[in-house]
Figure 1 (cartoon, rainbow, N blue to C red):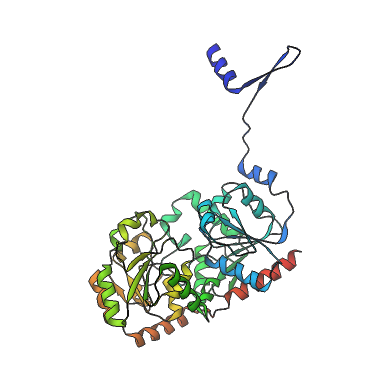
Figure 2: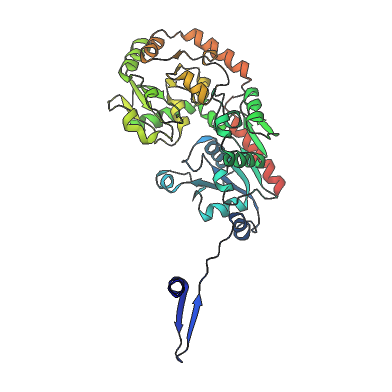
Length: 416
């Protein structure tokens, strides 16, 4: 008993001696505060600033996505009128380049919670699950715009994926995050219907198009092409952009496309000197050395900040089930699907519609992929693209950022 008391005193007690010879003993006790209580005590008592906007691109993963194009449109049309805050991880902050007028703040830091608590508008393309765990809640006088990060994609998402809903904690927090959203940004009639089912309680949807896709119109592709050529030293070479998605079990054999045969097929069918840029999903990037071969015509573009610039710059795109090819389809340039594990992936995640109903030629083996490239019918493909976009009710026209910014200005004016 006495030993236990001594251990306690040694750990918790602090002695203080005075000049008069007296001594005081201070006992320290840990004070644990619930995260939600802490948020309201230290952050949520501060006033909301209507013209402050917090941006979160896929949980702090660099400077890109729909939030980037919304932020830059605000800088262009309303310079100096908004306080723009960008949440980014420490690692990404060290290498990302932010335009003047955007303040980078470390994701999940105390400062980040303060920015969230006082911002009039939140703009995000993912759930707020990690923040909700630590007490974040939207306050009166705040407005949450959710752009999400998909498109006319084929793979099922969120509430439409049974496996995800087996995680009770995730389900509760994802639904809570969705309920906080005031406005969803969609690019089509089809996507609006998916939102209403996959995100539980969706009511207010703006079919504005996806701001990130504005780069695919006007002079955007040329500017993106110049940046990509300079970054990867590709001047004069044609680009195949290969962007596969991840698998829950992290299997890697599904990424074996036989790069040499693909390049040879591209050169024979389309001419020119080809290079293959590969961007792995963030969950797979640690396996890059096993997936991406060391060839001079293959370059690892996984670390490139803005995937949309890669999409805009590519002459041809290849994926398995990633939704980014459904952005690329807006360019009407050739796109291909390599679905080596189609049946298995369909059982795990599920598809909204058959792969064969897309405009993209579908292959299941490396040999079949090379054959699809060699036999590509450009006119038939363009016809299928038009039919596909019309069937989905797509509204993309290169002015999505303008529409979202118009909505933001109206919201901010109403909050003042």
